[in-house]
Length: 452
Ligand code: S2G
Ligand code: ZN
Image (tube, rainbow, N blue to C red; front, top):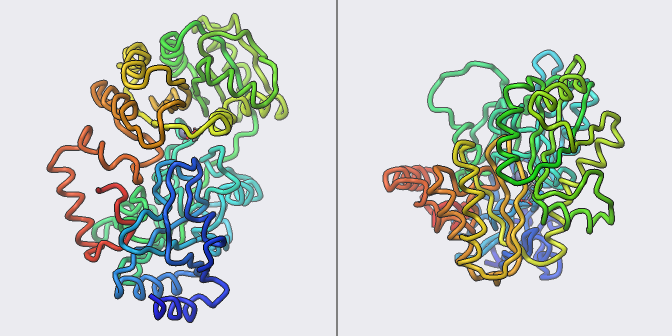
């Protein structure tokens, strides 16, 4: 391995190969603290060429490469787990942003550009990124692409897959895939770029992304609506969806999530404490507030609600939703489930959830919040020991039985390969393995992620 270290130093420079344990530590533990491992070194390349040389050096010695952006992932997909020995490939230094093309609304970004900087560059161009999530200050564009991130605005602008017009990536053998032309139509062969989106570092290392921005809608309104149950929230969402063409955000916060968030924020509830709340956001060129108010009245949701229009009050309501994650993390190491369930079966899923969790993890605290409009809820559990998966399995089986999926946006990582067969057939998993073998025959790219 020592000759690998010296070769890596030659490629990226001595200062960008971290071998001391204390320098590696921050890269070797995930955000939730539930996954950690050991790396041989953390390597910080500056561009696609250096990434290509690093991959060739590692593949020839069968040293694994765990690619990492902002390390905000939640499924152990960006931290080493060994064996085989691994390096962490930190993409943060690929942080150059190109010139925005306001006509095509496209922006070339290095994989290490943070979502916050992408959002600022879009705003500078009079546009917006069309993707937002609480980890914006650390999450990187390369990670958003590799995990097909969703977040708060996916209901209107889609997940990262819809926001990416092209990308550049390095294959395990050092070969480069590049589709940065920004052409709306290009049918010359298989769409390798699209295959790499959501591949979680297991098929290639994404080094650049051509981001597709969306128009900036200046007129915004946000409503927090108290409802009497999670089931009532689903009914409310179904009533609102067809009435809000300018809908940009439709979130659920259940009472435990609301309470732990308000406690964490040391804030007071702006509407009565009820079993659940809807957070409904609109953005338009017309009158977002009027459209939202009319839809709430027509849906019978206008009694216990507060509507915010100015940016400060909107941010205050949004922070209640966005702080749930950190509030839970400050109370312990959560078991995080990111289920997707069709709206048609979501009420029965929510009705069955307490008994399913109670049977698998008596006494566990359950928090349900997230992107109700997408059928994507974050079920977080505090109580089960880090290595006790019984409640995770029970909840994911319930999601599968409800016609849903085991992960809607966070990805499979190292946490969920064991559950893939709940929602993917043997034939589908065999096809995934065939693709993995073809692109990473030595099995060095993020081994153990997606496919056990
Ligand atoms: C959210 C962020 C992480 C989590 O808040 O929408 O995707 O699951 C999550 O708490
Ligand atoms: Zn989410």
